[in-house]
Image (cartoon, rainbow, N blue to C red; front, side, top):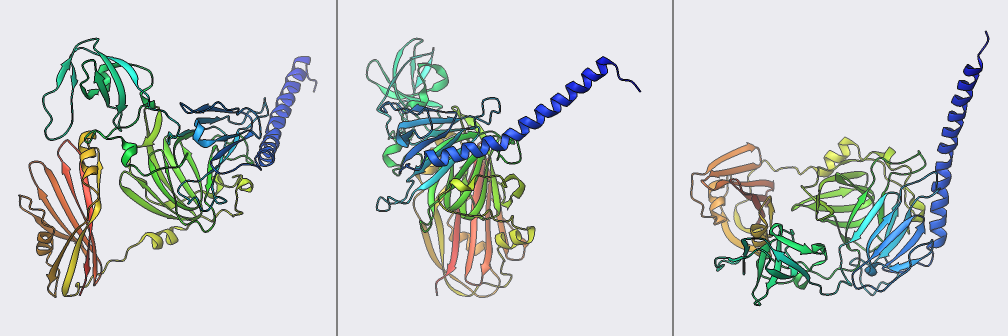
Length: 495
C-alpha cells in the first residue's frame, strides 16, 4: 500500500501535535516543582505579619494611607497591614510561571509568642483581600442626591419623618452600613443622617468608607474586637484548574502553630476556629477541607464541627465586589482525597500527612447525639437561654436590632416533677407569652415540639432530652414575608 505525499504530511502533523502536547504536559510538573522550590528559598526570612513574593507572577495593591513598597520579584517582603489585595497567576506553560505566595500572620495569637504564627500558603489563581483596614485613614467621599432622596436622621424607635432632598443636593459621605444599602451623610446645612445608596451618585468607591451601625450610629470598629492584619479576609480561587496530576487546584493552605489552641479567622464572612491545617477554595461556594486537626466553621449563625478527613461547603454570593456567605454551612461530609494528593505541604511550618477521609460510619458516629428516651429526673432544674440570636433573611435594620439585643443570658429555675415530661409546663417556664393555640407533638422518643400559628408567622419550640439531667432546645419565629430568627436554650438539673 502506498501513501500519498498529502497522507505523509497529515501523519507528520499528527505526530508533531502529539509530541508538543506531551512536551507541554511534561513541563507542568517541572514548573510546579521549580515554583515551590523558588518560593521555599526566597521566603526563608519572612517574619510575623509579612507576605513574601514566592514565585512569579504576583501583584499587590496597597491599603489607602500605606507607605509605598516594592513587591515585584521573588524574595520581596511586605507588611500584611500595608496590603489591600494580593493577586496570584494561574499556571502558564508558555511563560513558565505559577504564582506562589507565603504569609505569616498573628491572628489572635498573643504578642508574648512572637515566634508562633499562622501560615498561609497561596498558589495558583488566587486573589485575597485584607478585610482588616489597619492603615485606612479617615476618608470621606463626595456625592449628589437624586430627586426626592429621603434623609433619615436615625433608625431608632423615635425616628421622625425623613427630609426629602432635591436633585443635585451636595452630600459629604463619611460611612456606610454593613450591607452597603445605606450611606451616612452630612448635607450642606450640617444635618447628619442616612440615605439609600441606590439614590445617590457617589464619586469614588464606597467600600473604603468605615462601617457605621445603622441603629446606634457608632463606628462598627469601635465595638468590634481588635483584629490583626489579614485575620479577616475575602478571597477567590480558580476551581478544578490543576493543569496536571502533579499540580493542585488553586487554593490556600492554612496551618496554625502546634500547641496554640484554636486560632480565630474570618474568611468571606465565615467565622473559623482552627487548630489544625486546612485547604480552602472559594468560587460558587467556599470549600473547607480539614486535612489535620479539628475546626469549627460558622456561617449564618450555624456552626459545624469538623474532624480531620472531613469538609463543609458554604454557598457564596457576590456583594460589593467580594464573595460572602449566602447560607449556612452544609452538613459535614468526607472529603475527596484525590483532590488533595498534590497539595504542596512541604512549604508549611509543620510536617503533616493528609488524613484519610472519614468513612460514612465514622462520620455518623462523630455527629450523632444519642437521645435519652426515659423520663428526666425530678427536682430543681435551671432553664438558660443562650446569649446569641441568629437571623436569616432579615432586612438590615431588623438584623441589626436583633444583634444589638444579643449578649445577655436569661436564667430561670423551676421544679420538675417526676414522671413523663410535661412539655406545656416546660414551655411556660420560657415565659414567651405568645397568643395562639399551641400544638404539642413528640415526633420521636426524646424529642418534643410545640408550634403556634399566628397572624405574624409561625413560632416553633423544640426540646431534645439528651440525658436524665440535661435537655437542649431552640425556638424560632418565622415571620410572614419577612425573615426568621432563632435562639437556643438549655435545661439542666441543679438539685
